Image 1 (cartoon, rainbow, N blue to C red):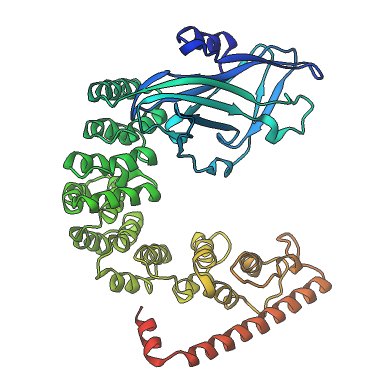
Image 2 (cartoon, helix red, strand yellow):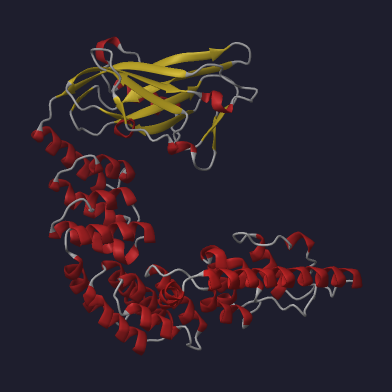
Length: 480
């Protein structure tokens, strides 16, 4: 987030620095002309125990040249604190900010940069008292630049933590409610409210989830509660949220024993005249984990066509019902390959390991411009485990060394990135615009010959392992 320099400086005028603390200081490097004013500005210097609080890191560029730096999320910042006895405050920082994409920031002359940091994410102030907080930004992680500052930005201040105060917390919740109503800093609101384990936050968290069903912070916070209001607030997540957050919502419903109640609320929408709504409702019913969902979803699977039917197949698996396995395996012989793929995804959601036999017919019958061909290859490559590479290799057309045709090329590419797959992609000749030379065709034949021999060895090895497996265990495995 970038702001003009004057807007940044206004942040300091609205604060009363505690005990003479100076939040912004000048930082220069005479060797290269860098001239910055920078520091960390706390939203408050007096809080109560459990109060959510943010800091703003501010940089304004007073020099005549660009100032550039890079970061991965907030990993260039560190925040520590000690209590009155000099003991360190408990850290809550996982140190995982360094996992992600590098962002490059450019601060132009006369302009500024600001970044918000959630203090509660870094430190846990469990007891009242005065704490010395030290904030540090180290640009040195990316210092191989001509405009390096050469030293860290450091701000120290005293934070007074008062005893817990229910009235004050109610005021804080109300203030964040106003932020949500105004569509302000919604992610900050989610972080702040997630810190307050109080049922009065439920309507606000539900409002955040309604605005963004994939806000995992708000969803996790809402799923803590076990009452009907929290369950109602999670329903949009089942319909619209990404799979990860929908799983969190499902766990919350299970914990509060609200699965059936959620399913009953969703069932009428399965009769909607809008197919998009029926798709969303089928998905949501699967995520409830309720036994009430199976029969309606099975009816949709039998009566519907197209995308609604596919959504029902996957949802049947996700429902976890004991009857799901038989229903979905029956779909694996359906002439509609898209339904088969949905059934495979349903079986995976049911916890069944992917079997190569489920997807091989869609691969060998497919080809260029057929979506199910690529999807089936990806499913086997990503989720097939030890079966992935042999399963893909068994789909090869061993008598087709064609340079022009893409079928074998796609499979050899998938083999390259399969677990323990043979590496032949860079030896294979492929060009969709020509037939290829005799030398290229001969090399492709050699690749196919080696892959066929590799597959034969894999098949023999698997047969040996199966023979060494007790018959009872094999029978059990076959049933699974």
